[in-house]
Length: 298
Image 1 (tube, rainbow, N blue to C red):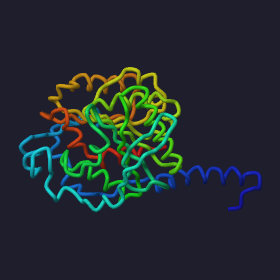
Image 2 (tube, rainbow, N blue to C red):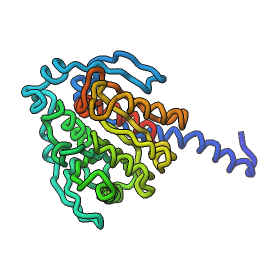
Image 3 (spheres, rainbow, N blue to C red):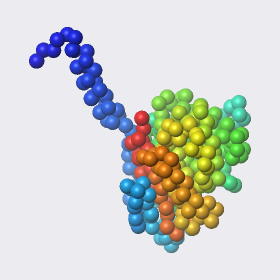
Image 4 (cartoon, rainbow, N blue to C red):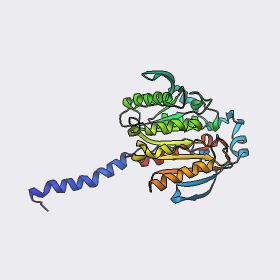
C-alpha cells in the first residue's frame, strides 16, 4: 500500500514510537550471575504486597558459623574471587569539600553503572572492600561491577552530616561526569543511611540517582519532600528482625509510609527473620536488588 505524502511523516512517527521502547528494553543492562547459588537467600518464609515485602529465613549457625572459617572474620574461600583486586585502586579525590579517600574497583571511565557503599559509625572505606568479612558479600559486589563494566566505590567521609554529604556528592559528580549515562546506586549501611537521605534531598545529586539501598539503616521523614522522592527513585530496605540499633518495626512503618504517600512507588523490603544489625550487609542479594532497580531505569 502506498500512503499519501501528507500521511508518511505520521506513519513514520508511529512506527518509531513502537520501535524505540523495544530498543530501550533490549539495551537495558542486566548484571550477569556471580556465585548466585552461594549468595541466594537461604529460604523465603513469606511474601506480600505483590512481592514488595519478603521475609527471609536467617540462622546464625548456618549463615555465619557454617559459612565462615572464622565466624564474622573470614568467610570460606569458595565465596570469594580475589582476582578482582587487580582492578582495585586506593585513591584520593581533591574536591572543594575536601579530599575524599576512596577505593575504586572496576571501570573508572565509561562505566555502565556505579555503586557506592557508605559505611556506618566506626567504619571506614576499607570495610566496603574487605573480601572476607560479611560472608564475602563485598567481594561479590566488587566482582559484579568488575565483570559487568561497572564501577564500585567505597569512600571515607568526615561525618554523617552536611560535610560528609558534600564530599560524597562531589565524588558522585566526579565519576558520573567520567561515565555519562551510568546508573548510580548508593548503598548505606547503618548510620550511613543519614547520608543516603541527605543525598536524596540534594537537587544536584538526585537527578543522577537510580536507586538507594538501606542496609540495617535508619528512616527519615524528610525523604517525602526530597527531589529523589519526587522522581520516584527506587528504594530497597534490608533489615534484621532483631536489630536493636534501628528497630525493624520503625523501618517497616517507614517503608509502608512511602507506598501510602505515593501508591505504586518502587520500593522493596527484605526482613531477615532473627537477623541482627549487620545481617543485611552480609545477606542482601546485590545482584537481585540491582537488577530490579536497573529494570526500572528510565
